[in-house]
Image (cartoon, rainbow, N blue to C red; front, top):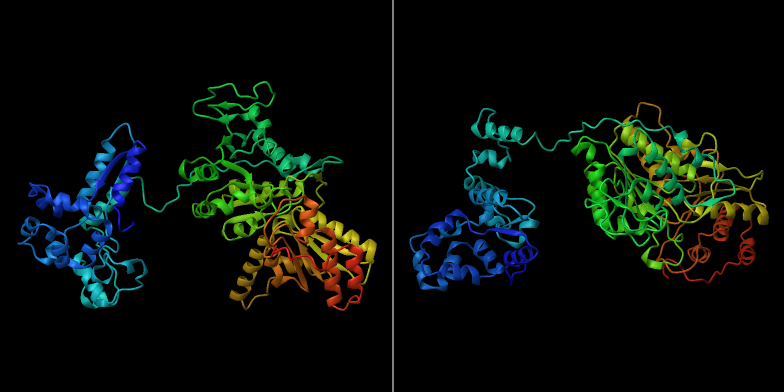
Amino acid sequence: MRGNGKIIQELEAAFMGAGWNVIKVVWGSRWDPLLARDTNGLLRKVMEECVDGEYQNFKAKGGAYTRENFFGKYPELKEMVANMSDDDIWRLNRGGHDALKVHAAYAAAMAHKGQPTVILAKTVKGFGLGKAAEGQMVAHQQKKLDEEALRAVRDRFNIPLTDEQVGKLSLVKPADDAPEMKYLHERRQALGGYLPARMNKAARLVIPELSSFGAMLEGTGDREISTTMAFVRILTQLLKDKNIGKNVVPIVPDEARTFGMEGLFRQIGIYSSAGQLYSPVDSDQLMFYKEDKKGQMLEEGINEAGSTCSWIAAGTAYANHGIAMIPFYIYYSMFGFQRVGDFYWAAGDLRTRGFLLGATAGRTTLAGEGLQHQDGHSLLHAATVPNCVAYDPTYAYELAVIIHDGLRRMYANDESVFYYIAVMNENYVQPALPKGVEEGILKGMYLLQTGGAGKVRATLLGSGTILREVIAAADILARDFGIPSDIYSCPSFSELRREAIEIERWNRLHPGEPAKTPYVKQALSKATGPFIAATDYMRAWPDMIREWVPGRFVTLGTDGFGRSDGRAALRQHFEVDAKNIAYAALTALAEEGAIDKGTLKSALAKLGLDANKMDPQKA
C-alpha cells in the first residue's frame, strides 16, 4: 500500500473498469453497531477521508490514539464511543479478519452471475501479534516473540496452553473426537480430500523405441540441418505415434515459422475455441495458418508467460486431470529462464513434466541479434531448478537420445522431472550415432574422437555448436603444432556435477564401504591433460565440473554482453573460436612445461590473434 492513498478504492476502480463485480470487505462485525447509529453519516465520512497510512497508525498505536485521532475529528463521533474503553476501540476489527464477513462475501460472489468477482478484503499487517508487531512496519522482519508477547497471543485467541507450555513453545492439537476436528475432517472429505496431495491416476504411456527416430540417428549424409530442424522432425514423428501422438502438446509463442514448424499447421492445426473466423493471408499456400477447434498446437502470440502457463497446465495434467500430456514448448532461449524464471521455478515445485526447448540458443548462434536474443546463461539458470534436467546437444542423434530418455523417465517411469534442451539454428552436417555412446550422452559426456599418437597432447571438451569449433581447434593443433587431442562431447555439465555431488554424498555417509567414483573422473581417467573446455555459454557452465577434472582445467565461454555480428566474428570476439581454443591449449601445455613458453608468441602471430584486443567480458 501507499500511505497517502486508499489501495482498496484504487483496486475497486481498476477491476470495475475492467468489467468485474467487486465486493469489498472493509469493516468487521464490531463496527456494525456504530454504523447503525451513524444517522448523519459522519462516521462514514471519516472512514472515507482517512488514508491507509492513518489506518495503520490506528491499529499500531492503540485505542486511546484512535479515540483522539479518528473519532475525535468530530465531537459527535467521540461521544458515540464515550462508553467504550480504549481496548474496546482497539478491538474494532477489519473485515478481512472477520470470518462471518468473509463468508458472506464468498457467498455473494458464488451467487453472482455474468461477471467474474473479486473480493477486496482489508486486513492488518501482523494481525494477532499484538504489541510485538501488529500494524507495525517491523511485522515482516520479526524473527521471534518473547514470552510476554506469546502469552498475549495465547490470551487473545483463547489458546489452551499454560504459561509453562507457552515458554516451551508447545503445540496444541484438539482431540480426534473434538467438534472442531470432526468439522475439519468432514469439510476436507466434502472438498475431495486432504492437501497437499497429488492424485496421480494417469496411466503410464507406451514410449516408442529409440530406433523410431532412425532418421536422426543415421545422420543426414551431405545435407546440413540445425538441431532445431532435427527437433521438429522428432516432434513430427511423435505426433504420428499411435500410442502417444494424441498426448503431445506442441506450444509456440509466435515463432512457429522461424523454427520450421509450419508443416504442423496442416497436420494437427492450431487450437482455437472459436475455430477460424477469417481467411488467413497465406491461405493460398500449402502450409497456411490453420486454426481449428480440434487443433493440437497451442500458439499463444508474443506471450511467454501465457505460453509457459499453458505448458505447466499440460505438464501437470497427469496429477490434476488423470491424463499424461507431453508438452513441448519451443521459444527463443533468451525469452525463457531470463524472462519467466519464476514460472519455471514454480513448474519444478508443481512437479511439471515436459520439455522446454530453448531455440536459437547460445551467445553466438543467432547472428546479428545482439543483446535482444543472444543467450549465454540459460543453462546456468536451468541448473538452479533441482528437478530440471538441462542439456546442450550438438548433434541430432544426441537430441534424439535425450528426448527419448525424457519420455522414458517422465511417462514410463513416472519421474517428476522436466527437461530444458538448447537447440540451435545453425546448419551443419549431422553425423550418425556412434556405437555405445547413449549412456555418456545422458550422463553428460562421452569420448567423441581420439587424437593420433604423441607424447605431448591435450584433451578438449565442448558442447552445443562450439563443439564444432573444438573439433576445428584439434585439427589446428595437430596440423600446425604436431599436438594430438582427444575430444569429448559434453551435452550437460550440470548433470555431470549433480551426479558427482550425489556420489560424494554417498561416500561421505558410507565410510565403511568402497568409495564410488563420479562419472567425470571415470570418463577422464585415461585422458591426458591439460583439459580445455569451450561452450557458447558463460564459463561458469563448464566450470561446474572443475573439482573432478584430473588435471589443469581451462574454460572458455561467452561472458559479456551479446552484440550484432556474424557467427565467426562473434566467436572470435568471445574467444571461443577454433584458433582461441587451440591457443588456450598451447598456453596450458606451456604452463605445465610440456612445450616451450617461448613458442607462445610465435603461435599468437601464426594464429592471427590480437593480444591487445579488448576483454569481451568488459566490452
